Length: 84
Image 1 (spheres, rainbow, N blue to C red):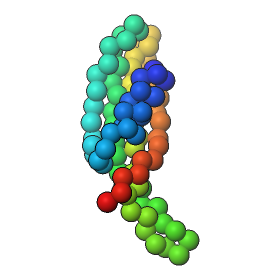
Image 2 (cartoon, rainbow, N blue to C red; image 1 turned 135 degrees about the horizontal axis):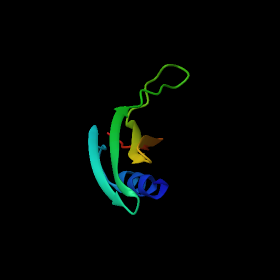
Image 3 (cartoon, one colour; image 1 turned 30 degrees about the horizontal axis):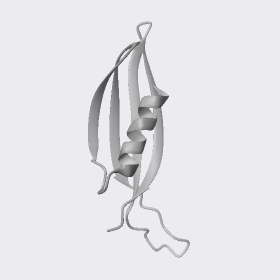
């Protein structure tokens, strides 16, 4: 699961342009199916003088799966910079 999230994070970081606002992936693993949900928002970070830092996006990747009949999930959040 960590490898799946790490691979997706690397793809997003390497791709030019702003990441998709919302996207879902289905991944087959040796342990069964897994869904990865991607959400992207503007980070809205500011400098100490309240100047907005443009081009920074917060990406959240959530992996969801079932194990022993119980829903499981793991999440990673990271920033990407895409100059305007």
